[in-house]
Image 1 (cartoon, rainbow over the protein chains, first blue to last red):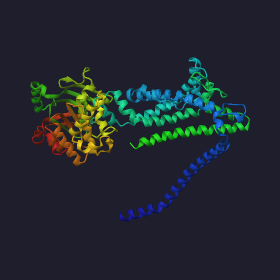
Image 2 (cartoon, chains in turn cyan, purple):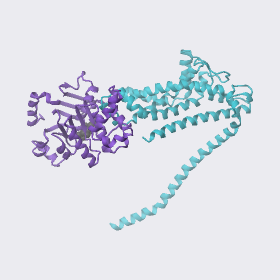
Image 3 (spheres, rainbow over the protein chains, first blue to last red):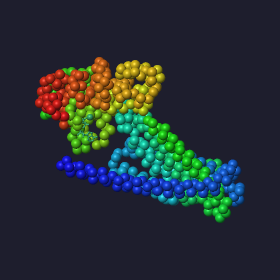
Length: 294
Length: 269
Ligand SMILES: Nc1ncnc2c1ncn2[C@@H]1O[C@H](COP(=O)(O)OP(=O)(O)O)[C@@H](O)[C@H]1O
Ligand SMILES: [Mg+2]
């Protein structure tokens, strides 16, 4: 008996080399995958920066679109994107957080709720063009907003809404039940518990998830094209029903021109777009780290 | 049917001295879906008593105590029948708002659950939700409640620091102080010391002894020595039924039911 055990453990020790070998191979595969991705990313960034950086000047920010590349600037697109986001953020935040609160805290967990839940998750995967068509039909035509900031803002809000809802739901679900019980146990109403316990706890998570969703609205082009947002704009919107252009539209327009100079301008525009996205993601990370200590 | 002789004398006593009972449970049944968790419970709980609820895990102690302040409402799919009267008012009645019931009846949970706020804000929370905004009243109540929970001296210099910085035992006493701020009539405690070390446990037990001067206390405990040390009355629950309810001395020294005897002498559970 003793002997057999001994032989077996020798056998097992003999296999260690093989296991370590496998370990190394697997690690190598993952490392290669990471390296491959990083290299592509670096090449891409290098190309964009080397092309676009020389064009980043104060004039570039100050000028409107132009037929002459040396006079063309990105002012209308940057300001237009800001206008659009001033519609997207409040609309998506209010609708998204409201829906998440309702689904998590009020709705009965029945078949209907599960069906709604499933559809929200599915909407997150619907191609953005489809949201563009929806926006074109409803906001541009039925509501008669035209190719305006409002129409594009609402369309983009719908596009990011499912992600905002799901992220908010996850944050709300992560609130410890004991804290809600403590609040109810003191005679708090449901709303008081949501307002004073659930939301303060969930807001960092809601903010992190929502910011990532909003950054998608900044980068998306397809819905704007479908909604009919112009690309050559030499004015700033002065109201929400005015027409405008946005960063990805401007970039798209420049890349589709034959002159190389415009391609370089597009690269400069991409640098700005990337900068905005990195800034937003950093804010999300900062919020997450700041509140994680709790 | 499940009533012992002891309980029926209790019932006739309850007829005469209704006003002494803070809680009167009559033929209470409760189901989680199909699971019959409380079976025909009859219990009269006296004012200013410490009433202990003991019994093996899963016998329905938490379910019962959560029903007393209707925290059980938070669990979906629960059905009840029978009545629970709190000071002669049916707690299941539409006219008795749960918010009122839970203001009059405080609850301390198994795991200390302070809010992720300062010590001060934890106590002020209950006042604020009830619309008390006067800073002076809040300040005074915070001090009084912390003194009442024997915590003041330990925290008076760091009222505005996070409650999570306190030890487990201090957090639990903070949760008791949070209840006291609302001047409750009854305090429900569900295994309040099960997450605490022996020294903190002793402090909470001492505190309960002091609190019984002013409050009626119903405490669930899996620790029989604790029940014996701190309670006046003990109810022994088994499989969702009250096997026996009597003076703690009687339960521990000469129980009427052999199952009680088996349990307290450690033969099961
Ligand atoms: N939320 C719930 N849903 C379904 N069954 C439950 C729930 N909570 C408790 N139970 C069941 O009810 C019985 C009593 O539970 P509980 O009151 O927590 O017991 P105790 O506190 O005495 O350990 C157990 O059988 C338990 O599994
Ligand atoms: Mg329990």
